Length: 387
Image (tube, rainbow, N blue to C red; front, side, top):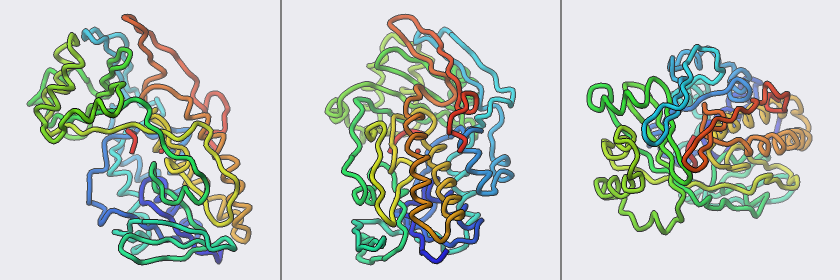
C-alpha cells in the first residue's frame, strides 16, 4: 500500500487501527493532542465483549496481552432498589463473554504493540481541509501541518475531521453523569464496598441512577446520573468538592445511606460529564481519502458498547485497507457500508454495560432480557461519554 495513512486520535479506536495496519505491514502515523501517554487519567473499567471488542483484539493479535489484564470476578452485577433492597444478582462464573479491564491498561497494551514513533504526542488539531484528489491537509494548534492521502478521524465526540464529511454535531441528551471515587474502600468505606459487591452495582429510578464499579486496589468508581438541563448543573460549583457532593446528594434524598455514601464519601472532587450524542443513524456520502471511526462517527448514549465499537471500527477498517491496498476507495466504501448499520443497531441498546436492559418504572422495577448480537446473528461480529 503506497498511500500514507494519518490517524487523528490515540484513543482505543485509532490505536487499534494503527495496530491492525502494522500487523499487515502497513505503516501509519497517529497524531494525538495529549502531550504524553500519562497526561491524564484514562477513565475507569471497560467490559470487552466477545462479539465486538474481543474480535478487534484478535485481529490485532493481542488476545494474550488482553487476558493478562482481565480483572477476575468483575462481571458480577447486582441491581438494587433505591431503598437498598437487592432486586437481582448475577455472579461471575467466567462465561459471560464481557470481561472487565482498566481502560488505561488496555490502551497501554495497544501503545506497546506499535513501533516507536508511531504516535506523535502534543499534536492538537485545529482544522482540516480538502486539497482534492483524495488528499487532505491537517493543521495543528502549534502551527505545523501535514498532508496525507488517507485521513482517519478517530478524534472523538468533538472531531475536527468530521466536518470534512458531515455537518452533524453532538447534541446534549438532557442528562449528565457525575463521577465519584472512593479509594481503599474495603478498609475506609466498608459499607459502600459491601453494597457494590465484587463487580458492578446499579440502583435507579426515573431521572436518577447510581452505577458503580469495583476497580483495582479496592477502588469504587461511581457514575451518578441525573436527567437535568445543562444550566441546572452550571449552578453547581464543582470546584468546591464538598458543596458539589452535598448538592448532588440532595437529589437522592430518601435513598439508602449505603447508596448515597457513594456520593457523600467521595475522596476527590466529583467530576461532571455531560452526555452528548450524534443523530442515530448518522452517515455521510463517500468523500475520497477520508473517513471516521468510533465516537467521531457514531457517538451515542453510554450503553457499554462505545469503546467496543471504536475498537471494532479500527480493526475492520484496518482489515479492509489490507484487503484492498491498491484501491483505497473500495476499502473505505466496504468499511463504511458495514459500519453504518452496525453502529445504528448498537445505538439502540439501553442500559449500562453488564446489565441486560434493566429499567425502572414508577416505584417498581423489572428486568428485560435482550439478545446479544452473537446470539441474534447480527453484523456485530463482522466508542466525552462514559464507557
